[in-house]
Every structure is written in structure tokens, then in C-alpha cells.
Image (tube, rainbow, N blue to C red):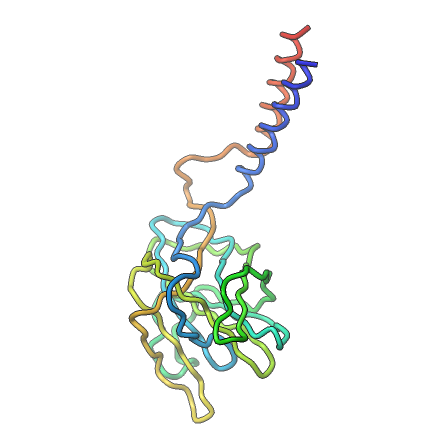
Length: 225
């Protein structure tokens, strides 16, 4: 019986190590939902743009952020773009080409944060399965989510991990696009996940962990017999 307990413990070690091996580290964390919320619209004609910094060459595999959405409207999709140079022009067609851009249905989960403006409810958004190679430096993340006839806000945070304090909103109004507006007291709640390259401390691949756990289990059984 004691030998079986040791074997189960070895199996538990395998599960923990395998999970650690599969988890991608956080490359940049700008903070979570906190502080006052101005309700900066990040849907329809409105992009919200914030910056992030990478200290080393990395492969971005996921982007996580939080929004407040109108539950009365169905979620369609989200547009994201990453720029190496900030798009200052009022005409989006003259913006510098993004290093990555995509339209995707993000994974969207209610998060129980306080309702704002009486009808906007909090959601965690995740876009995973990415493979974006980025060099060290500052980048600009632009997000807008689409709901038919409605709006959504990219949550603010009191975290100040961004390379600049503040964020921008770009609006393509009915009368033509406006230059991006800067809001110095607002910061966006988001995280960038991925794999630094080269990794300073490589994690063993799952097969290697399997062999280690099996060897430990065999050793425990031999000692017990």
C-alpha cells in the first residue's frame, strides 16, 4: 500500500510538471480591472490602442484582456493589430503596416467584475494559438470588438507597467476619421503571453518529464519490495 502511495505521488509530480511545461509565461502584464472606468468605447468605429514592452526576443502565443459588454447584444468578433510604430495619422489607410493583425472570435468568459453604466458586464477575453515573432522593444496593441448596433469598453487598470502612462482612442466617424486622441490618465487591462527566445531556463519537454516520473515510480517500488 505504501508503495502505491509513492507511485501515486510520482504520478502527481508528473501532472504538475507537465502542466508547468505546457504553460506559457507572461511576457507583459499591464494590470487587471481596477480603479475608475471612463467607458472608453472599443467597438464599432472605435479602436483603443495601448503599448507594451518586450525585454527580449519572444514568440507571442496569446493575448488576454478584459472588457465590459452589453449583454443585450450578441458578440460577433474582435479585431486586433500590433504595430511597431504608433499610427498617428487620422487616415487608417496610411498607418504603418502592422507586424501582425487578425480578426477572430475570442474566447469570452464572464468574470463577475462590477457592472458599469448599469448595463455593461465584465468579461475575460483570450485570443490564443498565436505565433508572432517579435524583437525586443515597444509595441502598440489596437483592439476593437464588434457587436451589432452596440458598444463595448476595454477595461481600465491602475497598473502602470506600460512604457507610457495613458492610452489612445481612434475613431472613424461618419464625417471621416479623427486623429487618435490621447487619454493620459487611462491604462488598459491586458496581458501578453508567450515564450522568450532563447529561454533563460528551458523547461523539460513533457516526454522527458514522463520518463523521470516513471523512473521515480520504479525506484519506489523496488525499495518497497
